[in-house]
Amino acid sequence: MEKKKKNSLKDYFQVGEAFGYFFRKKDPSRPSNFNIRMMHGINKISIIVFLLGVIFLIVKRLF
Image (cartoon, rainbow, N blue to C red; front, side, top):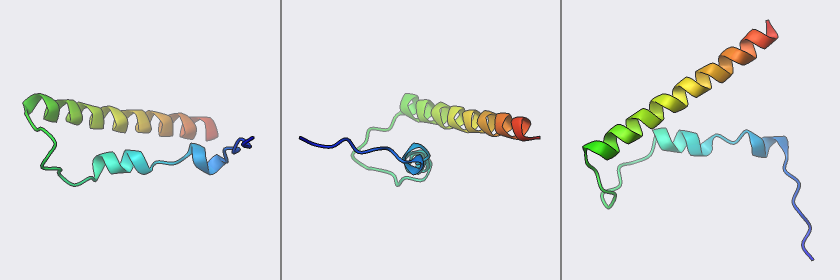
């Protein structure tokens, strides 16, 4: 019987995948056309806006 691993606070605040999305190398085997480039651009903008909103709410709550 396996014991369940308890998640620590560090596990909830991992941002490695988000940074990897912004700073990854170009993969030549991945298809690249206008639609995919625009989709990834909009995804990056939405991630930035979301993080700015979360930061704003935290700052508003603290002060």
